[in-house]
Length: 421
Image (spheres, rainbow, N blue to C red):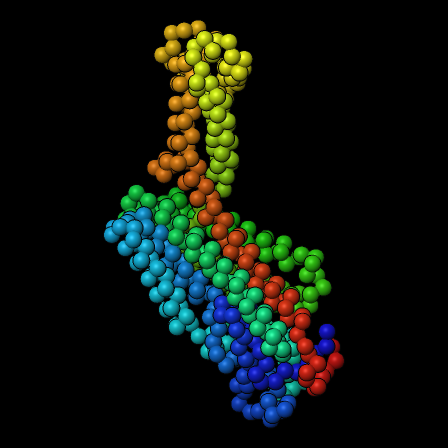
C-alpha cells in the first residue's frame, strides 16, 4: 500500500463515532507554508477536525445512567405504565442530548497523538503524516484519514451503525439492571442492593465479578483481533498495534482499573462472581423445566381416560413405571400417590390429576414467578447481565473492523505528492 501525504480537508472517520457522516482534518499548527493545491499538508501538530463527532463514549454513559433510572421507574410504576413510559423516553432523550452537547471531541483532540507518521519528513518543523497515519483520540477512538468521500461516507455509516447497536445493548442492560435492582421496593430497594454490593462480604464478590468481566472482555478482544480473515489487513493490524496495552506501565494499570470501576459503579448492578456459579444452577433449572414439561405432556395424554381405561392402557403403565423407577421423579411419585387409596402400582384418575397438578406447580414456580429468587427468569437475567459487556464488545470490535475493511478501498492516486514505504 503506497503512502501519500494528506492535505487539509481530508476526510476523517472515527471508530467511536455515532453520526453517519465523516468529518474533515484541519491544520492547527502555528505556521503553515507547505501546500498541495492551495491546501496545507498536515503534520503531527495538526490534531483536530472541523466539526465534532457524536462520540459513543458519552452516549454509552448516558444510556447506562438513564437506562438504570428507567428500569427502576418501570418497576416502581408510581404513575402508571403510560406515564412512566413517557417519562422514560424523556429521560433517555434528555440524557442523549446532554451527552451530545457537553462532549466536544474537537477540543479533546488537541491532546491526541498521531501514530505511523513519516519519519525524516517534516513540514514547518513537524513530522508529516500520510494516509497510513492514525490519530489516537484521548477519549479512546482512532481517527483514520480517508481521501475518497464515497469511501469515507460508507465507512462512517458502517461504523456508526455498530456503535449505535453497542449503545442500545448497554442501555437495554441498564434498564434490566434497574428493573431487577428495584423489584419489590423501587428506589429504596435499588439503593439498598447497590449499597450491599460494595459493603461487607459482598465487596469481595463484586471485585471478583469486575475482574472476571475485565478478563472476559479482554480475552474476547484478543480472540477477535487474531482472526485470520484480517491478518493481511494493514489498517486493522495498525489499529491493533496502536491499542496494545503495556501492563508493565503503572499508568496503564491505573487507567484500566479506574475505567473498570467507573463502569461498574455507573451500571448500577455490579457484576457478582457468584453469578458465574449460577450458570450451573441455571442449566439444571432449565433441565428440570424441560423434564417436567415432557412428563406433564405424557400425563395429559391420559386426561380423558377413566379408571378402567387407565388400568388397561399400556401408555399409562409405561409412564407410571418411569415415575416409580426414576429417582428424578421422586417428588412426582409422592405427589401422585397422595390421597389415593387404590392399588398404587397402577395409575388412577386421582393419581393422574395429582401428578399433573404437581408438575404444573413446578413449571410455573420455576419459570414464571418473579418473586421466586430461584426462578429461571431471575437467574437468567442476572447471568445475562453479567455477559452484557461481551455483547457490546462484539459490536465495538465490529466498528473497528468495518472501518479497516472500508478504508482499504480508499483511492490514494488522487494526490501526486508521494513517498516510498
